[in-house]
Length: 90
Image 1 (tube, rainbow, N blue to C red):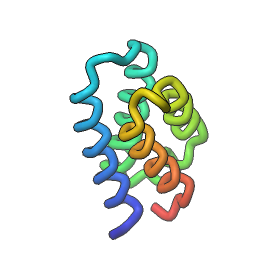
Image 2: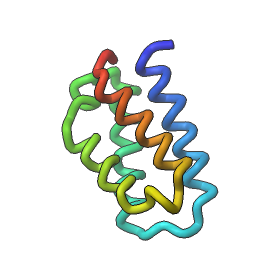
Image 3: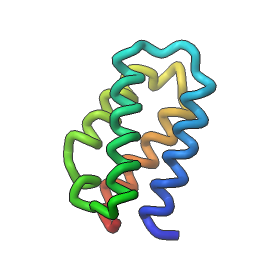
């Protein structure tokens, strides 16, 4: 499985997890949804430069800090996505 395929899979997992979470502040949700949209767009355009932009990982990390203890599943998925993005083998 390629890095792009793994990232697509993690995006699906993240979307499913977010649907199940009722309690999340608007700013954190906005950061996550924005990062997910950026990743999705970059994958669809086969734009690896966009996936390597530091703000993408920064936004994921910022969002994770807000709910690290309250939503461990979400934190795990985002951590996996950050690792994949860090590999930049896409």
